[in-house]
Image (cartoon, rainbow, N blue to C red; front, side, top):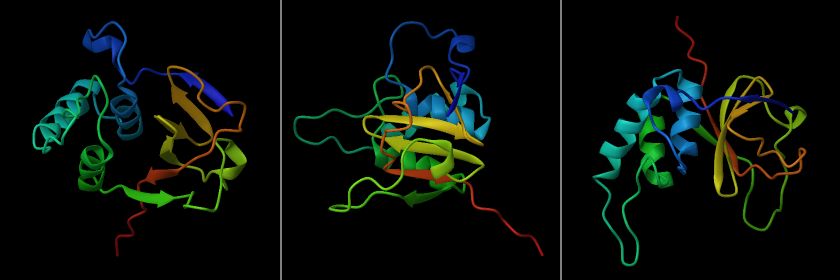
Length: 146
C-alpha cells in the first residue's frame, strides 16, 4: 500500500511529545474535522464512561475505548464492517486489493489508522508489508437523496 505521513493536524494544535492518539488522528483525517475538535469531543464522551475495577477512563491522549469512539462515529453517520470473526482467522489484510475504495477508518491489533483510496494516512506505516490483519473498518455509507 502507499503511505502518506499525516498527523491529522496534531502538530498544528501545539501538542508535542509521545501520545497514543491514533483514534483521534484517524478520525480527524477521515472526517476532515480539526484535530482539536475531535480531541475535545472524545474527551467529553470519555467523561461519561463508568470506571471499572482496575481501569481508568479513556482519554484522547492515552487511548480511547472502542465504545466511546464508536458513539462519536455513529453519531456522525459512520457504519462498522467487521472483517474478522472468532475462530475464522484472518481474511482481510491491510493491503489495497483487499480493501474497498473510499475513506476508511481501519482497526488492526492495538492500532487504528485511516486509509483513503488505498493509501494509508498515518504517522507510520502499520501495514507490515500488507500482512497485518484487519479486524474491521468504519465507513461512511452513501446516502441517496430522492
